[in-house]
Length: 182
Picture 1 (cartoon, rainbow, N blue to C red):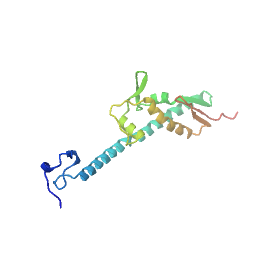
Picture 2 (picture 1 turned 30 degrees about the horizontal axis):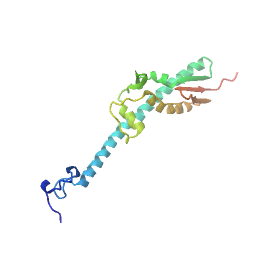
Picture 3 (picture 1 turned 90 degrees about the vertical axis):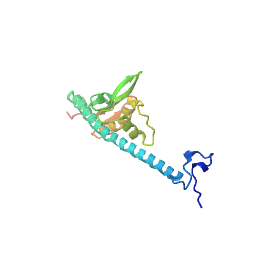
Picture 4 (picture 1 turned 120 degrees about the vertical axis):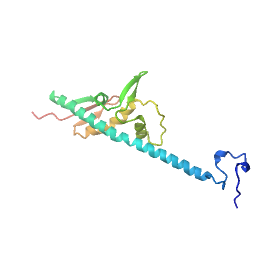
């Protein structure tokens, strides 16, 4: 049989945070644990919603970067060249909604993320929703570029160049195409 008890008969050695005494009419300890799990799941769901914004935004930025890259290659072809070396970082400067950088103590950080985008969306998309985001924490601009560079190179490779490679230690991507038959 359960004994009904108010706070006055509770063992003083048992902290109140451990939950109410069974039968006291309030939430049980197990119920409080269920509530904690539900709260954490809701938080993760919210993070997933925020994180889902970045991939589509990133894809739009990469599409624009590829178009600018193609324009650079066309200029080289007009100059009768069969190759081009283009800096991904330089190309991104021409994209209006690309995250903007700011120099602080010899390091570039993301200053603004573009229309409707946030550092939090980028963070949870790249690091996962289980990771801990600190609002206001600076994001290295190079980290954003580095995450996008392999995707950019893959898109450029899909354009059918004879060769395409990223020059290690740089933001440069070099491509070549066949010379015309004389």
